[in-house]
Amino acid sequence: MKKILIYGANGYTGRLVLEEAFSKKLSITIAGRNGDEILELSEQYNVAYEVFSLEESEKMLRILKEHDVVIHCAGPFMYTAMPMVKACLEAQTHYLDITGEYQIFEQIHDLDEEAKSANIMLMPGAGFDVVPSDCLAAKLKEQMPDAEELKLAFTSVGGGLSRGTSKTMVEGSHEGQKYRKGGKLETKSLGTSFREIDFGAMKQLSVGISWGDIATAYFSTGIPNIEVFTGSSAKQIIQLKWMGRLSFLLKMRWVKNILKKQVDKKRPGPSAEKRGAGKMYLWGQASNGEATAENRLTTPNGYTLTAKTAVLIASKIINDDYKAGYQTPAMAYGSGLILEVEGTAFG
Image (tube, rainbow, N blue to C red; front, side, top):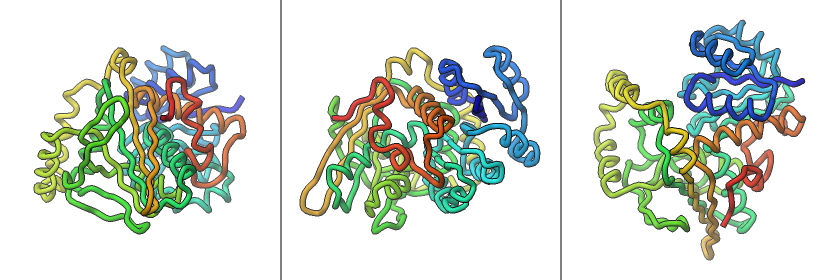
């Protein structure tokens, strides 16, 4: 039986991925740096385990060679993705992760030819970041093949952020908002791009953010002008503007460390009850300069969806349903991939 390695299984989202893979009766090994937590999970689920850090390159390579695909759940991925990806290329092990960091999509995209030579698939963003939005972008491209501009947005009802996601946001807090113009990444000040968006279930003030789709939607659709928004409030937009003005402070490591310590005081992530009650709403608009096309997508809570889509894609890979090279979710499986998850619907 082909085997899946879940690295970072002791993190908030990693545990959800483990639960989902276990429920599907897949052959899994869990791994991470924290030996006590990994051992505890191994005993709880009666699954194989390994303990290693990403600095232990020889051990990591040996373990990867024993597995067909890794689901990498240990962020921030700006520090953890490339060591794992490079080891996967050498071990010829398929790579999935759950990042939403646009930098990672750009970096791994550059390894497309190496992945093809190794006959493996590299797919960062196999969770909420960016499966639903990538499928929505591909759907809009189908509706308007000559689109030159794409706007995407998402908002949530219920749920909340995990500590891992919050720490990733802290790491990128010194940057302005990234967007794509004429095929190139550009920057504007935080909080200066906002609009009211009709998500179908509600209308909400939304603000521009540096989201993974400024890379992945470009690779999936070829649309050269892309901006991403998220549901916000007037108060939050004012706070973002102040963050932009204080970006010189947010670049400093000691300031980020203080912010991360504050994050550590919070709950690991939303409770099972909140996740069960939560929903995500996505909106997209494509334009060719003369006309526009819109579509919407509803999904379960983002963390729940991440576990389901990451395991769904890993299951496809071990059944030899994959495309070698760098792939986004929609590039590999089409706009309908998201509809394989219960509780999702376009329109």
